[in-house]
Length: 286
Image (cartoon, rainbow, N blue to C red; front, side):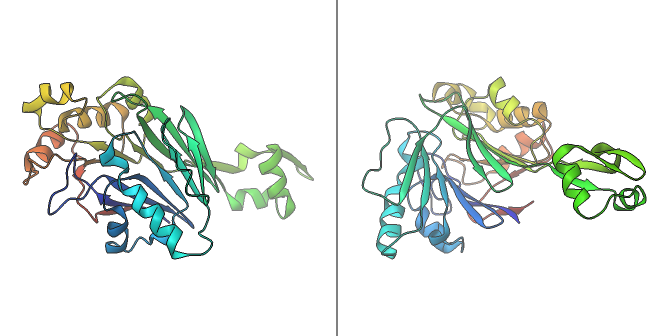
């Protein structure tokens, strides 16, 4: 199971329809949050994500709209159990959470920051305020066997494990190489840019992603405002998606000025047709 649930999709301030930035990723038995804006714990309850089962929280940058909900969530977790489950908390520099002993705090850095079972989470710097990062969820590649061919060459039982470990084995019919009897099934990839200006670093991070989650704070008529405030337009996001050859673009962090988001969607789809705009509660299964 790999599911993305958008908990909050507004930019800067909430609206009656959109909460503050937060999204949940559920992979098999592990649950993580990417950003935790004000009111996230209520959104977790509303959309039945289950705050008590969170394993990891990643905060993209030190702006209040992306982490103000963290304090309430941590207090709730502390109060809900005499022994809260361990929590990995990944935050920018100069953010400390000493009052929460159940949370192991790690500082964000460029590169892999967490290794889970069959997946990794990496951080990469983005153009916004100091200490701003995006995140990459990368599922491990999996080896799939051509079983009929493998069996015909005498590969069975413990030899399957051996060939995966060593890359080759010897059987009665000679040496067999892993690539002779298998193919690689590429792992799924999700990329989140947080708040950002478009840049080449983000494009490379998003390369061939199954889903790129990108902010769309402004429409193209407000390009100067976007650059001044270090945000992106919907067209910026679409250009990144096109260059990076992603499979799907999902826009989020929508300015409250856009009660109707059609203009954002139209501008993005003119460049990259496989575009959606997230709403609170929207989910994607991969």
